[in-house]
Length: 104
Image (cartoon, rainbow, N blue to C red):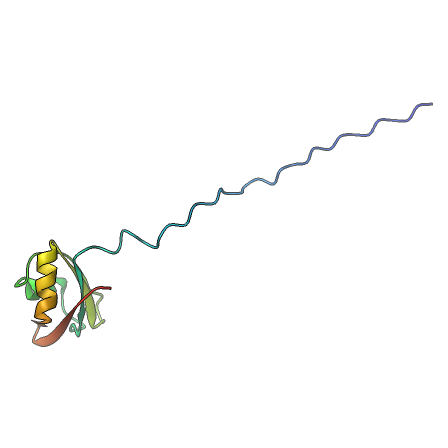
């Protein structure tokens, strides 16, 4: 009487492993050139109010202000405009003095 042969088992590779992505610097898109930080913004002002207040320095391409917050960010279309805003150091939005600082 001969012995039976053993069955061969296949080692299943546990799938679903994603290749590791090289780590990217955090949100390179978000940091735009020529952007400034505005401190002391009236909590209920509109983006248009901010744009109007900064219009004396140059053209803004975007303004981000969250309702209820007393700060905002604005992006100018040129370094010159941003530099003159920072050099000016302040603007008035809805009667409030707002401090302009370089965004860092």
